[in-house]
Image (cartoon, rainbow, N blue to C red; front, side):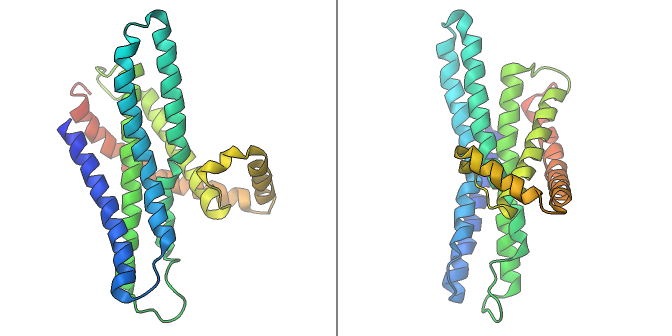
Length: 241
């Protein structure tokens, strides 16, 4: 448990560091505060909050369900499914920060902000997003293993890896939709309008191939970061793994 707390604290501090560098950029160099980046820090951390709140709710729910009889498994499944969907809806907000590396916030022409500062600031922002994605996904995958799969098995179950990979791919799809179609997580409230926007976008020549390449490259990057990190963490969380 102490390792989990340390991981959460470090990720929180990383987010605070990213937000601080964004604010200091404005204060130190006398330029306008780039508010979209601050908003992205908040949005990026939401999946972590949802994962933590979901686990807390699960810990409160399980003792109650202990006396619920045959309905307990059904209620548990419903809770976990809806909590996971809520997390998955906001998960792309964390991975999205990779796209900030284009340094699009730098003003055209002369700027008092040195390039090295913007590189460090944007890299910190990006790493905080990746850390949010890794931590929140690790929490969700661990809960699925503990609740629905046998955590005493000698290896991390393949089904949980399949879930993680699926979430990473969907996260990359969400990043593409957010960057190129300006779609937000809450746009699912208007499915008809969303489908029309998708149809119009992908009818354009070359957009489908562009989307495929984008999703594959971004998903591969996150997977190659996440898999070894979680595999190492699993050795601590599940000593038998």
